[in-house]
Image 1 (cartoon, rainbow, N blue to C red):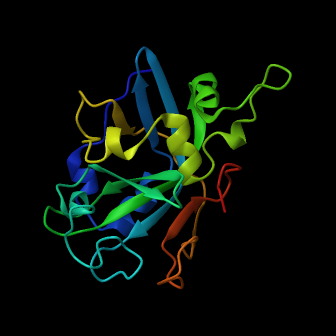
Image 2: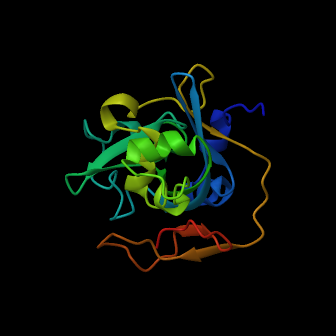
Length: 201
């Protein structure tokens, strides 16, 4: 299968539109000679300065500078002292916004993901739902860290972290309030593939 990263223009738009259209796309990680692939089944949009739950709400800082552009770059942060979370910057440069990748359906490299997660196969099989269901799990499975990946251009062909179009068309998309946050919880900015068993919440 041949695939290429999505163009920067895809991400240079309102995070709500990007979030919805990311469903069914895939995160691809190149690790040495391994290729890890996971279909995106759950995301959340964060709208920048006007969004109290967004890291960009207080303006530009050393930590969140990636969110202010250019679009199509990984923003990785550490949460609860134990998990990394993968976001991708949206909007034209200078205007903040991002999409948090919350869950993937693992498609390729499951054994490598399981090793990264410290999971053992049972009866020769790995419980795939435990690999990439949730933002912390998917980062661990894909080997995504802030030190390695924050600021990485996911639209660049020489990058080892891509977001690609696998030509998968979701049958039904559902919107819900975002989860795991304490502010701006009412607006429906979480998007999920309703038919997927890999959604986290």
